[in-house]
Length: 366
Ligand SMILES: NC(=O)C1=CN([C@@H]2O[C@H](COP(=O)(O)OP(=O)(O)OC[C@H]3O[C@@H](n4cnc5c(N)ncnc54)[C@H](O)[C@@H]3O)[C@@H](O)[C@H]2O)C=CC1
Ligand SMILES: O=C(O)C(=O)Cc1ccc(O)cc1
Image (cartoon, rainbow, N blue to C red; front, side):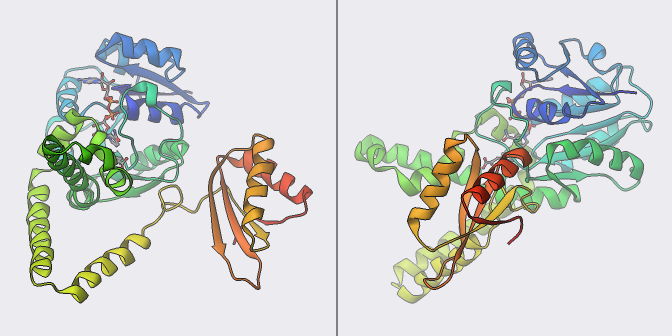
């Protein structure tokens, strides 16, 4: 029998989850959204099997409900779900960027027969809307689940099994721990990025060169300031306590650097940058950090820059897409190992065959 999954809020995240989960042939995806035009777009894009703006119709047959609305609307949706007729054994999960408040609210409000499991896929984009959805958005990213104590294990496992189609690395975490960690690595950086942009925008009024020279580092560190303001408003208000603590630590950290500058502490300033660089350089890469990349090939190449160009050209000519190229080891006297990451297994196999044909030694692991 088919599993019916209802997505509430068919935007960037809801649409991306839908696209990934509908790869399961046993799954039927129903969408609910407050906007009919969004549902129309989602149906045209092949994101949903069916869509409706009537919530009762959307959830009546659902075995799993995924609430992918903006955070404040997740609370309102849970309220509405308590009034509707649902399937016995239904699992309700969400994708909100904050977890403690939502999980607590769900436990208070939802009837005992309903299993609520908080969720947060740790990947996204500054874009929003179903047009930006992708079946591969969560590939190799972490997907946090925050089951409460007493949540039936078979229900958690059912959800984990369905989510395997996202190709994310599903992990379990306590909701409060989630909010503290994600507050530091995702929510607070959004505050910093936007504060920095606003600061420079103010300087711009005095001198228009700010705008023109703000390339490179400024663009890198402020990329996330282009995110959806409404979404981030909700996130900040929902993770208020942790963010206020982090902000205090931040203010202290900034004060310390300012003191070093005031006191002309050259060596300590260098240490400050060195410590940061060491931690930053040790961070996992986005596409490969969470789980071992499944579509990597390692190629022995002479340590010569022309070789990398040649390999890229060979693959490009056969329209084999690659997502990353990285040199593993280069020394003048030995062969370098070039790691190539492919989008999927079939592209990797085509790449392997082609490169072997041209005489390269190709390995699946380093
Ligand atoms: N954008 C990102 O990078 C990430 C977002 N999230 C979380 O995912 C959720 C959705 O965010 P996005 O997909 O980026 O937003 P989005 O703006 O792309 O999509 C939200 C969708 O929800 C619909 N909606 C609004 N109110 C609704 C309601 N009351 N009932 C049903 N649908 C409603 C909107 O019409 C829209 O289609 C948020 O809770 C956010 O915190 C989680 C991970 C990453
Ligand atoms: O693109 C980025 O850097 C993000 O910050 C993506 C993101 C945004 C919100 C989330 O809750 C999780 C991930």
